Amino acid sequence: MNTPEYDLVIIGAGPAGMSAATTASSHGLKVAILDEQTAPGGQIYRSISSPAIADESILGADYYHGRALLSAMRYAGVDYFPSSSVWTVSSELFISFSREGKSSKIQAKKLLIATGAQERPVPFLGWTLPGVMTCGAAQILLKSSGLTPAGPLVLAGSGPLLLLIAAQLNRAGVEIEAILDTTPKGRYLKSIRHLPGALRNLPLLLKGLGLLTELKRAGIRYINNAEQLKALPDDTGLLTKLQYKTDESTETLNCKTLLVHQGVVPNVQLTRALQLEHQWDELQQCWKPTLDSWGESSQTGIFVAGDSSGIAGARAAEYMGELTAQRIAQQLDKLSQETLLLQTAKTGRLLQQQQAIRPFLDAMYQPADEFLKPSDETLVCRCEEVTAGQIRSMVAQGCTGPNQTKAFSRAGMGPCQGRLCGLTVAQIIADERQVPVSEVGYYQIRTPIKPLTIGELADLAE
Amino acid sequence: MPNALPFERLPTNNAEWVTVYIEGQPVKVRQGDSAAAAVLAAGLQPSRTTVVSGSGRTPYCLMGVCFECLLQIDGVENVQGCMTPAREGMQIMSQKQARQLNDSNPSTLKPDDLKNSHIKKEGTVV
Image (cartoon, rainbow over all chains, first blue to last red):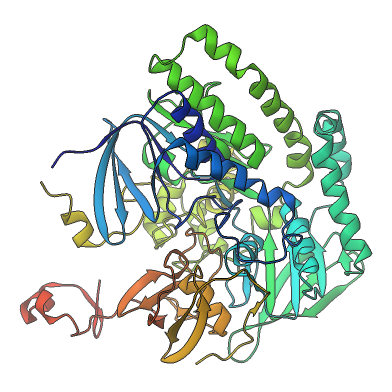
């Protein structure tokens, strides 16, 4: 069987993937997109080809901007593979993926990883209870199904998405009992030195302030400096109450649904599995692949763009995708170095403007310590049910990194393959050992990065 | 079956509606809903119990990352509900702890195979 060959294979059809595909195609490159979702858009423009909600004012204009990216990609004549989970990439850029229970393989001259972000794990007591879910999950339900969470509803966390989803649910007529802002005190002061940069992206800054005003006007109870979250179950094990602490007292709220959020982090599962070089981002408190200014990784021919290269948001991802695709076209002799610089100057400036606000946002919304290094009784590995205390005691017994605690406790060995505990475990170990997280490292991620059936593996037998 | 408050549906754009069976009960869901969205719409809580302690869980991230939405779909266990589009007639059951070895697929396993595998508890092969 002949393996189909492409000039460029892109993994992920969010803003970075879509804009890269369009740009590369305009230079005459043969492009394929492998998308794990059933339709293009990524998470930010999820279901943009057929949005569920009739009333477009609920999600707002920024969401529907995705339509422009989608129609451009459709005109470009890209081979789009939906429901396709990539599970391994060889050093010769043979890419193996599963689609509806069958495995296939394609080959790329250049590979662009645009797998986006995932929500940062938010460990606290009771975060595994039925009824607790992420703000991102609630937004996905809105976009693709028009579903709104069961009440009473409480939101807790920190960051722009918390405010955005609260505003969207409020516009949809959903009653919100309270928003608990866990941003620690003193963050405004800490982030203020980054304000000049943020002012370079005034529209986004104003949008954030607008959301706060919108929520205040709606009369939603907004509780600042909430700490020590504890979700409590009823007799049947379902979420029924949220306990929290403020300066004055310990309070409880009734809730059937609790939406949590502590920002997003790059999805590094694939870049890790390919053993690309990574670095620790102290301000964003996460790992990201080490890239040159065009997005090329430590392995020649493999590029990373969008939030999987470091969190910068949807617009930045769109610009990065375009820039990276231009560079790839130049490497494949479709344009000269000179033309490349000319053609990318404007987009480069737009990207810098988007990135200028990040230090301000990152300093402001860095998660509180209780979520980065949770209390001993808190589960950190949801799959294998390992607590922070167990990790700490393993460090006391001499474990120096996440791969050792994994071997001893199975933390990181469950079906999520460490996606929901990797950051927390590394940070706990670093804290106990009093060394930087970069010294502690991360799980050794191995392929397949998604569960496979034996049948899917057998498909590839020659 | 459903024992908790369901998620509610806003007015949506036109689309096909399909009937799925959640723990045997028919539930109408919108084309484009995932199996995980369907169990939330039906109020099935918990939708799985954990392998280690048997504690209840429901979908958490809905973007293919957390694996909390594992369900039994059309007889296949441990399927990621959020990555599986709902289809007419789909049979969705909650995932009870580890995958069970059942005799619905006897051709793949002979009695001798069982002797050689590591049996954690009756009926479960790991």
